[in-house]
Image (cartoon, rainbow, N blue to C red):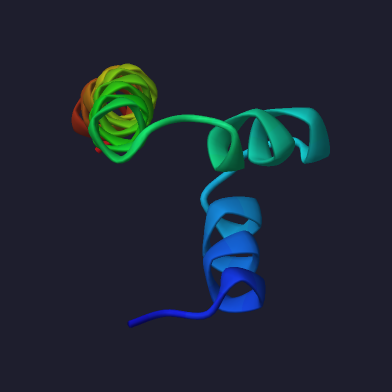
Length: 69
């Protein structure tokens, strides 16, 4: 079983604010699980958004290089 300080560090490293971490420890086990799922979905949304931006830039770089040769 993880100790509270380990859980706190992991939550912090995952992007939880100090306030959100305190709220997390006041939740039931089922609520904690739901909160982790929610946070994961939010991170994935952000990741996909950043990935899309990279794809757009890569496409632009490709087209510029293609036309300059």
